[in-house]
Length: 383
Image (cartoon, rainbow, N blue to C red; front, side):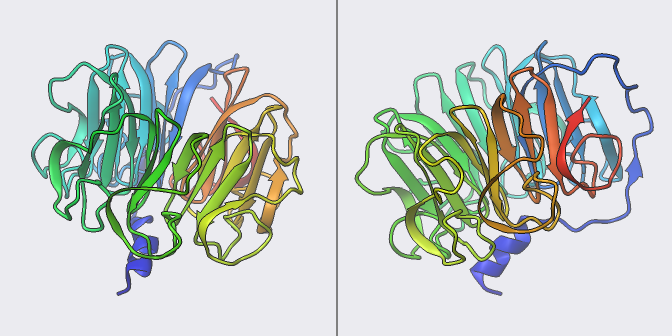
């Protein structure tokens, strides 16, 4: 089996029969207020304004953190423990989150050490990673995790067959491994590759590169961080299964890698081996935060409008259709107050400035959090 096929298949888990959690919370009169959300393969997690953590969707490997087996699926947001949290990242078969006291916890699948606790035993409830109380950001990939501490140092652990940990080897790591000496402002763990932006605003990528998702002019894997181009004005980056996207400080947006369904957003279906600028058909040069999903991408503009492009067979573009688009299109509600967006496997979620959370796209395992399993092609309130 080719690496590309493995990369495509590893983004999806085998779907079996599931039992639903029947104790779903009643709909509140006033929509819940949220701070941050993260989409995975078949599950979503989010932090409310009171810093409590909720997860919902599939639970094949314990990724919901509820202490329940793989037959339990939550169709609505379900609270995780009693702690208070500042950031969460949902991966493929696992989840990691940072508390308000800067402690790091992970749970779910652990076949390659992605929980970071020195073992390969999966966990169905949050388990602390090491003893440090200085973590600032975490990103969960398919089977590896990377995180930054408060001094901007980068650590990665888990699966490393393609060099996605960036430590110069292809050896799995069961605990966090310090990567190089560069200081980082952000990191994003994709399926089999990783990208990050340094505190000097330089862009680096490493790991699997079969479709050019590293942006390095070729399809050769890298086992340590490699700089993408010569620019030093990158503001944020997002790594997906087989493509990546990033935004510069001048608000221009770029994507690169696999493009059969238009995830690059340049109006073509050609694979791009270097960062390629988005089509100008949707308010060019006004982009802020960007996210790369499985086969689609979304970004928020400086005027807080949301645009998505790429594969749309499940409605993951949020424009009221299931028609794939090779260029960015505005979401169907035409809201002008989006604050953040996160792309998952055939679905996406976004927060508005009202702190209300919306999701759209595929919903086979309840990942949209609306109490059902039907897909939707428009942004739907999560309550």
